[in-house]
Length: 394
Image 1 (cartoon, rainbow, N blue to C red):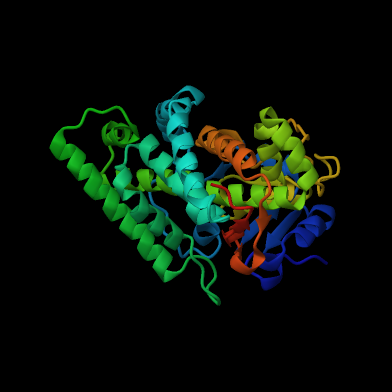
Image 2 (tube, rainbow, N blue to C red):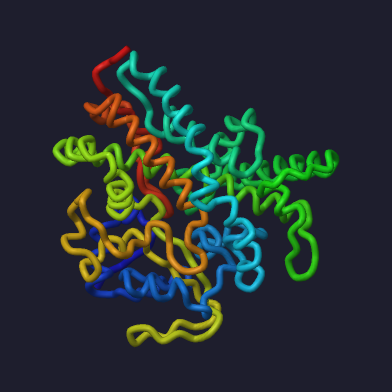
């Protein structure tokens, strides 16, 4: 009988064998300790991602829905329709391909500057020196945050996701970092109010937005902005690190990709399917749901095991094989339904620029395992640090 607990050492060390057993033996699995269900198969996750009987208003992270140590604050990703719909439509305009295309020259300049600095050394930390350096600055520019605050925000985001042995989920320092982000954004909003700012950007969008017929309070605005900076800066570096790790493991596919740079968007999508950092997100049942002979009751949590679903043999041929030429019709790496990742076009642009430049200027990189550190938590799998080495170049 399969047992799944996302906080167990076995699962955090390597969740994929447990995911395979769940898909085969218990695709709808009850976690009695947390009063929640785990869904392991692609079709179930895909379909229920659009089911109105599931709510995000009680939280989406394991620290909110399972251990309940993380407060649920007003954020776009924690809102149900119709308020979510109205606000997302307005925000989405700032994150559509045309708007993101205007950020590409800045992204390429940041990546070029980074590579100019590290090429003579012959090594780079893909997360800290490369991916995070890019993503937090692009997030700042996209949202309307001063670029000089990028390093501070990167530090707070890293603390937010920190984990400690023996602590299930978020730590006290992570919760403190979350509050510091709120304070930072409340001060930013207060400064905008004092200036009477009329700039068209997400900061001012939230300043003037209404939910339930009233304007948002400063702390609510700060929560929404925290969500944008956390989502916009933290996940991409981990996806880039995973992609560069897997490309170093498959030099033949890397050589093919270098010769076919137009395939980079699809190749990045495949690395996301194969190695999704975010293992799962949660919902809460609001009305009874019957699924494969099980009854999901109101008040119970539901965990969408995205990383398992992306390896589902019912959806993908040879799912445990990395194939950069794979072009699946559906993946769950950006979620699905009304709460799919609003920043997906940003991540895709950043990945394309980074991989284009890395393949062009340092195509022989290899992982330096002695100077790398895996990240294995209930929520995120990947690297805390990934150093790659290559032949130094001027």
